[in-house]
Image (cartoon, rainbow, N blue to C red; front, side):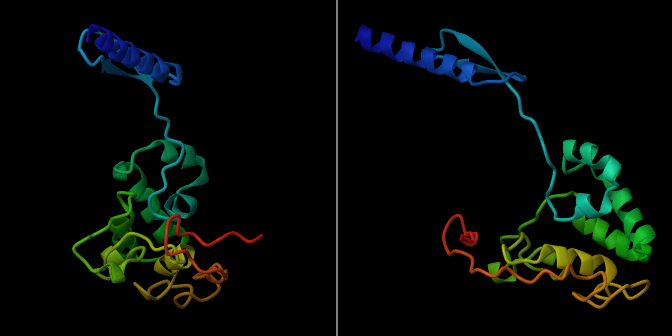
Length: 194
């Protein structure tokens, strides 16, 4: 019986050391052995490389010089970046403040919202706020055209519009829908071209 306890303890310590060996440093976490006799300190680093919740927010509405700061921030850093997004909508796009405020309230915090109390059939990017839908984002959502249409078209406001919804010159990227069907099982994306 004692031999089994020693083996279990040795296995736990070996596992902890293996975890330490794979680690690159950072915040401290404690790992207890099964018998609670000792604690090992482990350094864990989490590096955020990109902060992309909603499509096109940083790519279109945040000044390029601020992308590194935006990528390193948390989604709830609304006070820093929402004013910049709204300024893009009123300044660069020439749209009314009411549209900038509406889109700012939809795009910040920069996370995808899913309301599971709604029917999944109403899923779609921006739908949770603009059409009372399920939210989230479907693979087939043409998020570039949806984003450009929301900012530049008559869809949400007529003042200062540049185009009709989903039409050139500014409300579409003119790239058609995916030319291969999406899969019905994980990973869901369409098969690659070979």
